[in-house]
Image (cartoon, rainbow, N blue to C red; front, side, top):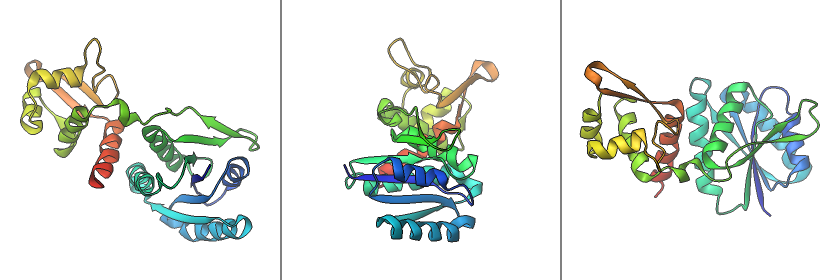
Length: 224
């Protein structure tokens, strides 16, 4: 089984990357790191290439936009590599908490198996990630509604406003935002927060997870 490992990389503590290489199949390694760690990541990848003879790549993200950048870069990798590899693993053992969390969020959204090191730094610990992409349980209509909200800054002050920017009628919008007996709405899925505004109007704010979903799907749709 041809396997791609994507791993977060930090200035120190690269034991987790080596642990993943020892315990799981690997045919290519991709390192995600900050620009400030690029030279060390290059040195590390060259060592790996020399020792086990595999190809490697380095992906740079900025600290100021670590979550957004990581989601976008990982999605670009998946679009390019998913047909080439039977299995893609996400190793979040190295790097700081922010970059590890961003990579784990990306794994969750895309249904990638993820792992970290255990407390003793000796055994990989598999993390509970959905076996399917989070986007698979969200309809195209919900994605379009999310994109509409995101396009004007991430907040609408009423269903009427959302109706104008999305092109959907209020009953359908209410159904997809609030949900129903057999349908989880965007609020139930944690993609938006709903509050009551002035005169009982429905105020809708996109959540961080909602923004990540928009980022993920914008990248995917731009490739089609």
